[in-house]
Image: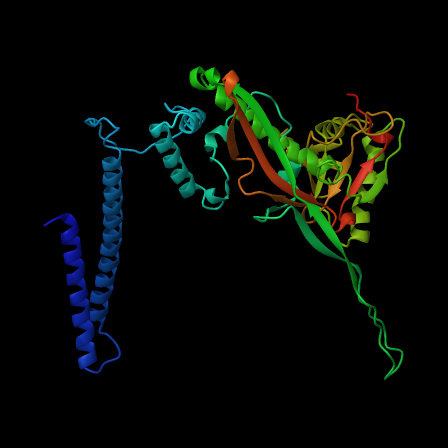
Length: 448
């Protein structure tokens, strides 16, 4: 008798014991079990569940073994049998930094050379991704799913990244179809008023709305690689794809800040309007900027009736604030642990790109190098954004930009084109006045 048969046999025996106890209770016309019967039933239930789990696992394993046998039989004519002498104690990911297989080399060989082994590794990788990325779902990907370690490793070229997109937006998944998102905005609301006297007409105003259309935009990049680089190179495919991925995310962040809304661009935060605050100063100081920050906040509270959540500024602007001192050469921005007195800004003092660790007026400061530094008449100004994250809506295609497509467009030159693309949409137009933008000659390039 096999182990599986023994488990099933014991499961049947447990059921018989449990049924006997319950039948005895029924014959005696009782509604409650004795303490001894309760203890026995609970023990049998626990054993039954344990046995059920074993049966389920053994059944699944048997099914997997059956499919594996069928697959081996199907390719027996083209695969040379070999004797396995290694005992598998741990299953590694198909593609990993220290592995023997290259994801991109396999993708190339599978498509252009009909390499069965490469196709099998890609299929196994897809199953691994389906298990570990259930929240995204590989069914959303039109092509192959890039291994996660290719995304996590450092890229060779420094990129500004996506601090604003990650820290100060309301992120959502892009719908599966369509190239526009439509949002209804009420432009005329109802009215209420005191009734002058009994039976007099009460206040009535017809509501009206307008359609806010948000365009879905495409961000893409490509790179031509020689077949020699793919087939004979070491890490060339990883090197190139990391850079494409990081470039995609940087472009997305740049678009949601600065996109013009035309020529295929998103309509970014800057173009959506918002409350304009002008800081004009021939000799700018942090102390003179400070009232403008308060003005930007109160305009949001006054016009949109919400509280802003973040400051977003270029790293050079935060550095300028951190470098400022009072008349006694004491810094105006100090670590919170030091017990600041009359400080303009406080924070942990750790210089972390993106979420800086500092705050002003109770709002965290996000540093983002995608904030332009060529604004204004002198093309040397940056801007400070005071944003309400809940009103900066960002939609991204699930998995973007993890879609990869190989096109043999340069076969005559032994060239393979790598294309990475993805879709996104952004709007700050639902309540434009929920954000403020500070600009002007007071924000010229700082000196230190």
